[in-house]
Image (cartoon, rainbow, N blue to C red; front, top):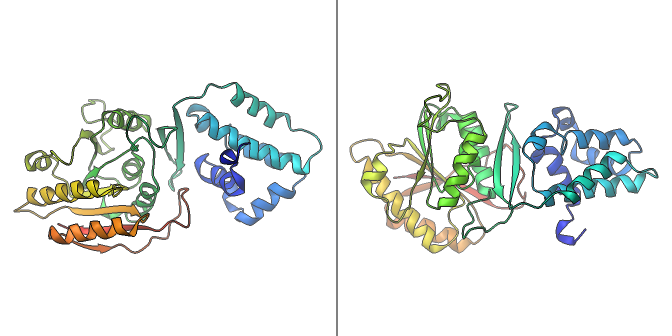
Length: 330
């Protein structure tokens, strides 16, 4: 494998435990114990079990991850198998052969296990930047915010939620499935992102608002085109959100200025009513960017406080990343 394709043990375990919906029974293995079993076991059944509960899992068969990712995953399994076995395990090589014959695609699926036993499956671009946008993939703060929401469902239950810059839709879909909002409005400005968002909503069994067959037990879901720079107070007022959220949208000064501007207009929407609660999640990649955001919030008269770090670790993202969620008062 090329260096960039070497998943390593950590990626293998994350793939096994999270992204490929590993069996609940194997969740009981301590990480070190599972690592030791993969390295030292002379029993092929463990690898067969992993294979059946990852790339052969019904969710992954129905919604395949990217070919490159599966190939990387299987290559790591084969490397571990060959380290302790003299006889090849045909199932592993057959699965790898299938990926070598498969056609590479610009889209792949990622599936995330929820505490309820359900899952969120997303169709995403296989490239970080595609069609001139980074909104076709899931970023770390979206996963972090989804975990926080699942730990704090009362912030969303029976409320109307507006998400700014929804991207692939992971956070919103997790909230719709776990937190029981009354209505959820996904929004973005890029046409390709909006098309993918609508597909991901339907992929996860939710109906868009215009669908007369919509499940009455599910939230009313809307996918809206929303350009922060041109959205008017009148347009924003139509959403009537109780809660506004955003994740990984502080990537440059221009985006920060646009976000603060749309937040000011959202505040003006409810002049005689209670302003919506606002939660903005971000990865601290550049402290200067975060400082600019809090400075501009102050200039706009928007107060903020940081939410405590939450305890749940449900989804795969880099442990060393510094992430934060700010609770804004409009």
